[in-house]
Length: 445
Image (tube, rainbow, N blue to C red; front, side, top):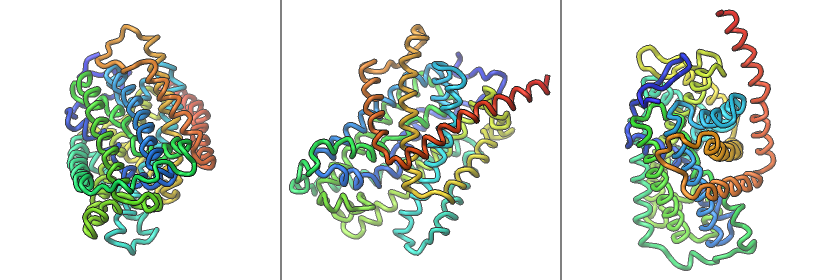
């Protein structure tokens, strides 16, 4: 398969316009979103002590990194739009791929876009505290519309926004880390273990998972990455290295600068850390950094989602117009428009936490399937070119599946049920789309 000419079953193909730096910024910008600004407090509350707290981050980070390396192996093998949708189709066939694509779009990606938009407004209230719920939803909708318009104009426009905002968020977090490392107080690490003991570690790892999610968005854009066999695995390794470094240091600084009881009760933990380090100006710095961070993550999510439906339409698993490219900008503009409207619906009907927990359950469950597809493809296609092989395979792959599989069972049953319902809806949807598409083929013939 040529890197420049991706077979498309007669459909359209996307232009390769993203270099290594942009690929890294997309991954880092997606993963370091609202999670790192919101989850340290939730992890601290569940952990009860600094020991389980830090170990929870290690467990969540390990599982996410292993999953990211699954993508680092598979993405260069199949450098097409759609990412894991393509991997699962190669491993398990058409129906399994549709179930993944439908579930990821409606059970994870769209709710996450809505969640990020609402999370953006939460930090905007630091500067404008009188924003109402209706006002939040209007502003969130306008932000999503703006980013959709930028991404219709071309992936380069979207990637330029991504590069600027990712650098900005890293600068803001770097300021907190550098300042915080010099003001750590050893007493804040007490107690090392809370009343629940070390058993609290896995419960604490559930919210920590959020701060490591989103690395898969880069794979959805594989068809637009230049020299994918080199740049996709390299961007994954470098990008996840940056993510782990930032997340670990932010949490060490958080625990070391704020008493655990205060951290556990905080809705804006990193802002409290900045307040402890820099004084009143710290809250403004971190709130601005959070706005930059969430905006960048929101942009990369808006960039990635339409590539899944584009790939499905190209394989005749969605209506053809989902795969139509703009005549001038060569972007899947109809997919972008349709899912922008759908994401705005989620903004107006959901809450931050409900969208967050449902999205975590669905995305983590599907990631286990993606990891299993790696094992299947090692058997089905043993001689395929693999520029980077999964490190420690199969032990690391199976460990990631077992750890994540256990973590998703700890999600609140209410949100687990919502996620399962959305995932189950993919089964009748598959047969409906197959019937309609086959009927269209007969008419065209």
